Length: 159
Image 1 (cartoon, rainbow, N blue to C red):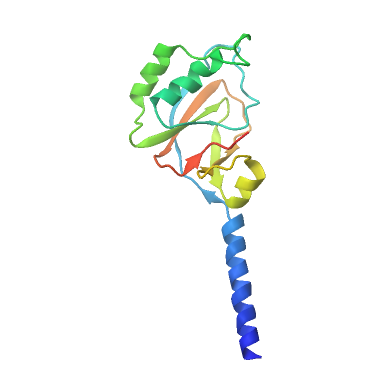
Image 2 (cartoon, rainbow, N blue to C red; image 1 turned 135 degrees about the vertical axis):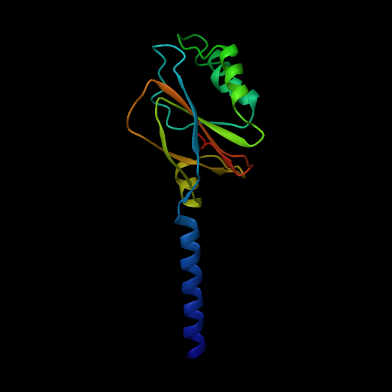
């Protein structure tokens, strides 16, 4: 009888630890690196519910310039930033030490991850952990660039 109680306690404790690991939301620290104005007055990406994760200068150029030269933006009035402007921004960023997160017209309040959030809000099966953003409700006319410590553990959530 004593062994059954001990086994039951161990099983309950193990299940409790697994649930805690699965559901507990870990916070990832970040800081505002810079805020820049929108590329033009009518630029609107308020409906974008995620962020762009930038690891290097090439990805920064893609998200801020080249992305708007592809479908569905190719035949629309949308355009990105001037490449010279983005080149100057990239000189102020330290890609050796930090990765960067770009948010459009919304400030970032929190970045979290957990296996539960990954399953609930991310639809990709990649080894990196998806960071789930929480945004401020105030819509601004700025684009925000945040920095986080460089590592290969995180990514933006999938579509």
